[in-house]
Amino acid sequence: MNIVLLGAPGSGKGTMAQKLTGELNIPQISTGDIFRKNLREETPLGLQVKDILNSGGLVPDEITIEIVRNRLAEADCANGYILDGFPRSIVQAKALDSFQNIDFAINLDVDKQTIVSRLSGRRFCPNCSGTFHVSTLENTTVCPVCGGTLIIRKDDSEETVLERFRVYETTTLPLIEYYKAQGKLVTVDGTGGIDVVYRRIMDVLHK
Ligand code: AP5
Ligand code: MG
Image (cartoon, rainbow, N blue to C red; front, top):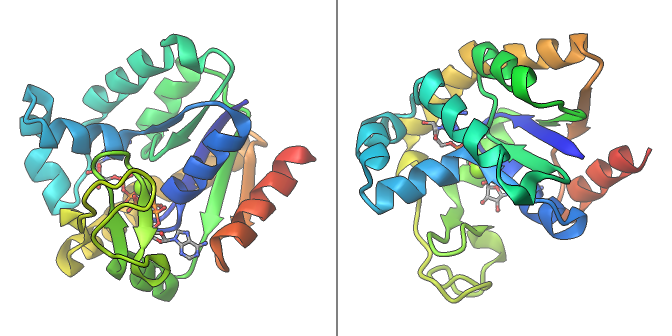
């Protein structure tokens, strides 16, 4: 199954992708995680995208498309994958359609107030890419999965979150109509606890 997860920053794409990947046994491909890893390792790509990520803008389409095209050609994607954070523009969606066949685009629908509270308490593990919320962590500095040191993402500052929202509304939101026109859009209420939202997604996939 080839799945695209759509939704505003902080809507829960990464959280749901991590649960789906465990149950469906297909990889999660997060363009945000790929860029952050390159940034941490100071690769040429990391240096190229550093200012873009830290300001909340979008990495140019041609760079992102090439990364995803190569990643989806790897063997572990042969039985399907979950795209988390890609596509993010109509240009990216059209490119994806030219080399892959998407089954579902799941849109996580979450109000802005909930998102602000989720992002302000988010903690990220650079070691295993685990994403958590302070409200569910016993220790807010240690990853409960791998023991790595949890960090606050640089782009979770108030100013950058506002910019990410602006970019989402102008450039990414049109993808909802794009996938609706293809009959592939499934909108899921993304509010409520993690397990509740996950169950809603699984119910849709089982239908
Ligand atoms: P990216 O990493 O994709 O960031 P994003 O889209 O802004 O999304 P987030 O990761 O912030 O949120 P999420 O929806 O994954 O929510 P999460 O599960 O963490 O991209 C980062 C940057 O990379 C971009 O700004 C851009 O510069 C670049 N980039 C990436 N892809 C690109 C592309 N295709 N083209 C160009 N540039 C690109 O959840 C948030 C919090 O809420 C967590 O604390 C979590 O524990 C909590 N939570 C989640 N679900 C629930 C729930 N149901 N109940 C309670 N808490 C919950
Ligand atoms: Mg994410």
